[in-house]
Every structure is written in C-alpha cells, then in structure tokens.
Length: 149
Image 1: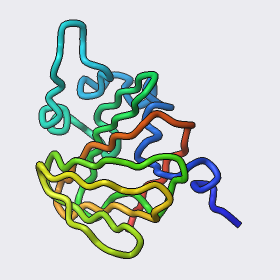
Image 2: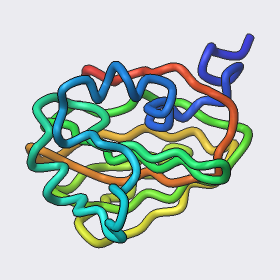
Image 3: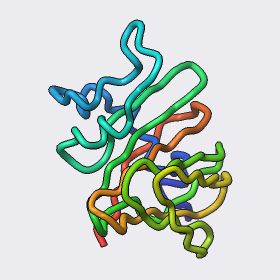
C-alpha cells in the first residue's frame, strides 16, 4: 500500500505554497515573491532572519514552486518520493545530507543536487542551521512531513 506521501506526490519540502498565509503570518523573512521592482531575493538574509525550522521563504507561479528551507542540526525531511517532477536542491547555508535511493550526498553552500522523480529521498541537517532551496515545476499539492531523528 502506498504511503500518504506517495499518494499525494511526496516531497514534503514543496508543501509550503499550500500554507503561505499560516507560515508567513508576521514573519518578515517569509514574504513570497520579490516585491515590486525587486529583481533579486537575498536567500541568505531570509535564512538568517528565520525564527523557526521549515519554510523561510516560498514562491509559487503558474509554472514554478520554490522554497527556502531551514533546519537545525539533526532535523530534516523524512524518507519520501514523488512521481511527478525532478527537484533541484541548492545549498544556501551550512551543510546536510541528502539521501537518494540509499546513497548519501553531502550538500554544501553553493552546491546543486538534482533529485530525479520517483527516487526515494530524505534530507538531514549536519549543521546548525542547514538551509537550502528546493525548486521544481509546479504540481499538485502535498502534505508536510518533518523527520525528527
């Protein structure tokens, strides 16, 4: 029997766009799309301003979902998969482990990792904090799952 994540398309880091109002309520670091006239989003500044683990910034357009995620040491995202899209991860701060199909890949600042659709993956912070961006083509909604190992 497939897990709830499989039924919903998996990849919990990408659920942020479903809860922007709740996540961003009163959070200066979570303002969504760039402001009018702002062409560049300072991801490092938004990560530093984050006051809780999880989504520090999210953007959703007709074509794209992007999320900046922040996790303290040992926290992350449980093992899951998605059947719809490849996901691009980019290290923004600290470092962490991205497990893809049982193989661990360390992701550091400035590094990019492509996670293929249908691959089982998990993410765990090795630093305090570990921040990264998750980017993919827009798709159906998902439910959050956080790994508290």
